[in-house]
Image (cartoon, rainbow, N blue to C red; front, side, top):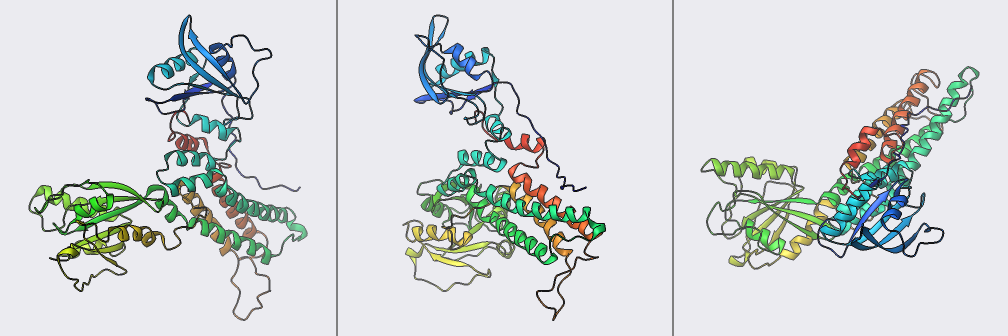
Length: 483
């Protein structure tokens, strides 16, 4: 009998209770929006906001009405009630949004009344979780909702918006579709193994596998760029004491964030400033001057400097050009695998001098942090130094560690499957069909099918097609309440 491959899918059902939460940030504002989702959403809203005069035939989905909310004879607020009828809503359920005046009083009182009429408080991310469970979004799109909310820069926001629109999901589904077709044919041949039936040549099979590997690898390779777009570029500012590191931080940030002084050892802890350049967030970190420590506090400061260097994406090594002092060899060794920029500071005090630094691929800039000379040029050069010259590329990028992990595991499985194909011998015709290691059928085909299933499961974790409840709870618990 013909049997299609059996992938392990987790069947999840959306709960039937009704939830509510404040969907806008608490505090003073023009309006506050309270969201209700579930089977009793309209019943609760209708009880709170009866129209005057009564509406004939009720209210239609996708419409809004002005309503006053009373508690007995006490007016709580004047509101706008918007009704989204299932399945045409964010969650796929009946959804009510009540817009009231902002501030603590009105929103708090209205929320209390909603809860008293049969709703419960939503958990963090529960509205988006229900949207996923009801098929309104896949898991990658659901995660993009949180990314879009928390995006701090234009580039991070655009990356999240492309993922929300389904850009990443489309690429993953296309790969899964080809692998599913390949797996179905392999399992079909295994069912007819005694009849020696072949539904696809090994050459075609290997070509499909190679294409999917290339696409998955290309997507996986975007993670470094995506991580920096999402989290920002961590830039450690290091150098000897009194090289002008704190002054440089203030000049780059455009404000006084660090204390500056002619005294040595003024900076004891890491001072941080965040700015946006070319749509990317730069996280500038001023560190303690590196020299032979004179006490326990300074020793800890220098230790923190070294930890900051280890975590940095790029290092600005600041040298006072009028009185150059270089970090010790132990510190320079930390720069060997780091993108490093040599910043020759205080150029307003001296003439240019030849410099050499025992770190490869070092860019060099001459600035006066005090007078802001050369600062703009330095700032604009930093993103391309880390992300490359194609920084303006608006391709789909992987920004989530979870997605990168799933892609990496899928690639491992596909490469194992690829290894089952024997390499072509030297001088052999390129159009000759390859052979599976150990034979065309039998054990090797079973191993190939097993590797493909594992790859499909890993890719399915990205879109949520093969994900467990524990992973879902972990993902949506990171959302804010009301989304």
